[in-house]
Length: 493
Image 1 (spheres, rainbow, N blue to C red):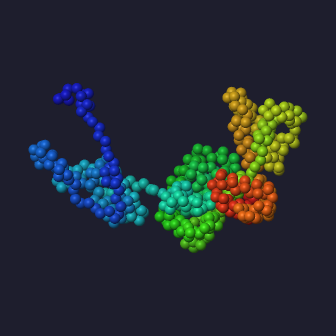
Image 2 (cartoon, rainbow, N blue to C red):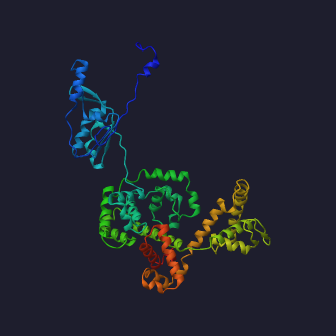
């Protein structure tokens, strides 16, 4: 200020300089593994030192610094406190305390974030050093709880091509079995949310399978609608908070990769696709060693959920109904529910003439409520539908936003539930049809041509949809279809 006079001129003398970070050369980011040799020699630059001496006409200014200066304003990381890294950590004692390091006779300021990746058994190297205790912040890094991430690790380690070797869902189920060893069976929020007995065919008694889906950000499709509604922000927040105390036991990342490698190599050279039965057999053979890790009954539970999911896939794949007629039926019901019994009306949305009666409404409602529904249940359903139609669909969507009935939220919701109900029964004609099963076995053989056209068309549709919608190969689709029929899964769920 004394020289330039104007404060703004001072700012003109300030220049920003880019900082380069290069992990490969240790600039800004230095990562040391246990086997990396320690460096004791100071870093100098004779050419630059000569220029400095010439410029200042003195050799009092030294261009010298340590390897720690490379990470000033950056990060120095120790990967595992073992071997050479034990001494590295101890040598950081004074720097962590004061931020100052002596290089020959020169004091060097070190402003670095020190990070150490520590296994629990390696804490003995520093936890009894009192001066470290109030200067080290421990951050627990739990084992992975998201099965999709666990699968990504397998793919990164063994290659993306391994997915082709597995039937869909089987690779994910391997990861789920591994993750089950890392979860805590005390889950008050999940147990308060749903009644596990109600879903005994879908999940395990400890609700691990439910938690795994929630941890991936997904609500499972087998949950009843009333339970989906109960999953509010508070429930989600509490479950995620509970997850912070999980992942501290069970199979480690290294053990997981080792187990998967053993399992995959066992089937790598076989010409068969890896199935759920192969997965189950592998863990049952290991049961004596793994019984203390894998929760009791978990493998059976994951098999039940797998069976349920593949059954839904096969049902959807073989489903083919007249969806235009379904849309007309829903449109007629939404209109008719606003009139009295005995009224004969013409629907302004479909143009159909309807005679409103208890039987007419009851037959439609059976799709949603079942044929054994009571009059009280049907009246409650009608009241809810009519209330939403008058309050939102008609008043807001149609009149205010000029939407067509078939594009409204209420119509789409009813349509989805209608389709879901029809799909539930889509497999019924084929369950006890031995010709259908034999035709599946004979698919893509000369014998397949001997079956009637309807069976051939149904099987072609089934396998094509499994391929397009659920990523099965043709052989995988054929195998899973026979699996569903042979296990009589349609009668189990």
